[in-house]
Image (tube, rainbow, N blue to C red):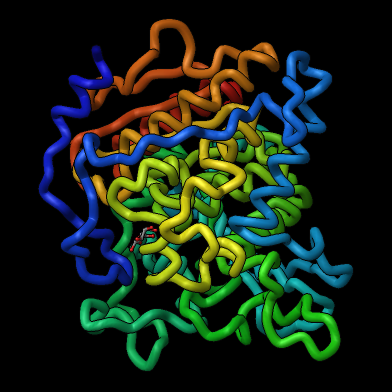
Length: 435
Ligand code: GTR
């Protein structure tokens, strides 16, 4: 079986993501044989037990699954947008990337006030575009200046994480010149624009700084009722807020004639891959949804309990999910949903799930299984899903899939040129070439 063969290729050298990862836990399980027996909820069986057999039945079941994810996993998003949402064009550099691109910087103010919280969007668009271009939208971990060394990119004034590893990249929680381009390998701008696509990004901390402060900063307080000090147990955490921010970026793109807002692929890596899936599940304006190494709380099935578990993620990152999610720490079988149903919420739109061999913490096999187990929903809606012949996890570096794309590549937890090339091919197939 191909799936088994691929599983055997998985090396057991553990690596951890480079952001703010706690030390590797000695007791994490990587042994398939030690996974407890589990039964997954069926995306095509309603809560009352009735089967979903026609495409016409799906919207009702979809709403039910979405409500379960809101209540038990990510928390409810309070409102689509606030009435004062507005945009400010701040910069346009026509000769960016040696003339191959146009750089634009736009500030998204979430309310009528010109003050924080706001989100600084950066757009890199092909210079030779004949009309509106399709685009990839993704949040970044370290600021817009980190994605390319150009001094044209405005240095952010937002709070930045400062750790023993950030050195001279961040001082007093502020971005430094030395950090320009230090994450450039994750953003192959030349390749993206040469293929006819735009790249739109923003620093995720503009929406909600990624630390547990009881939700006093970021966008949460904008939505508090009088006397409310924190989200309720079924209200959004940080992933919910970041996903909401992606939708606000799309609100802006709908106003920018240089971008085809009906052809926007939302993409994210790691915790931001969890975020892109949740954004794409909720906001059906996203034409394509891509999860890169998203792991626990992203594409990986929670019930497999391989690598990072619900208990571990809630302990290390108590602000990512809603408080109700804590009930499922060490209690995954009680979850009314599992992550294949998150992928199913994207249907019938194209979705891509990617894994890396050296990313066992994210459970690559569990990521594949989610994609596979979402397929019946795609088929119900008349789409092939992974398509003919993709039964088990494919071999390493062999991308597969039709409406659901999947690959597991050589290497570690990262967003690489290999990943991007697959996403560009996938976008070409589903959005039409960026021409
Ligand atoms: C890790 C976390 C993962 C993943 C990763 C990242 O520490 O355990 O779930 O989100 O961080 O976002 O880099």
